[in-house]
Length: 326
Image 1 (cartoon, helix red, strand yellow):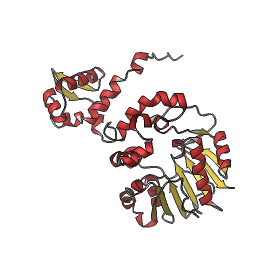
Image 2 (cartoon, one colour):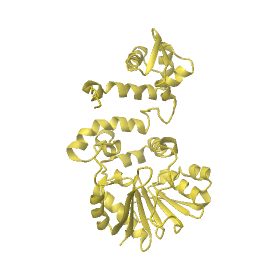
Image 3 (tube, rainbow, N blue to C red):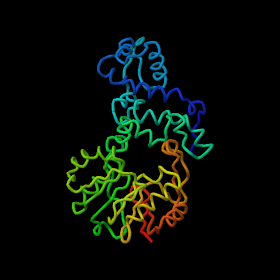
Image 4 (tube, helix red, strand yellow):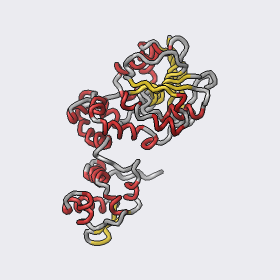
């Protein structure tokens, strides 16, 4: 019998370590050390902060095995802290990473009400805050795109195969990473990217790099407004889980309207098999969104004028749901 792993409640509830990691990431301490600045006063000068306070932070992280103190006030990178040199892994409190970190302080509101408390901390709901702060919005788009999440896999299954698909609308598709890969792999398809104006404005570089720009139309709008009609496939990738049930139904209704009479809607994310356990994720805290079981989704899809035609796991383990307008 395997021995039960010891669980240290104090370590699990420690907020000091993650905040210290976010701070040294924001101050680019690992980069300064890698460039040869390793003495505490020089590090503090380079990072424009207080030497004594920074020494306390680094001392704590040394105890946690994240840096090494090779002499009094002299610091070096180790295998763990070298990870902070990777921009895709480095925390940064100045961009979307900061919004996500601070948002955990609104967890009590989320648990008490089921709604996001983001506005309590930042003065506006999440999407309105991004619209009011273009720099944060840009860092969010980067996180959602290839730089943050890597190149998406366009090989999700659809009933009957891809041969009959000539037009795809990526609804809420961010800066177009998934649509670019779909079009790159299938040169017979034309695509439309729908997202907010500031986001689709940043999609050009991704489409150009994929060599598909001439087969893409971008539409800067809310997906709560009428969508471009008549496409063969409407894709909702990691969209539905960002919204409560009422808004999810509204998005599905817009897709149903646009897809009539013969289009289909494919959903990646936001719906799970009935036997999948609930888990807390940062998007639920930021947005008050809800991941629905298939049984719950069937009701909302029906209310939106859709019928579910298939629901299955793809080889990667992702749950794919396909719908058609009634």
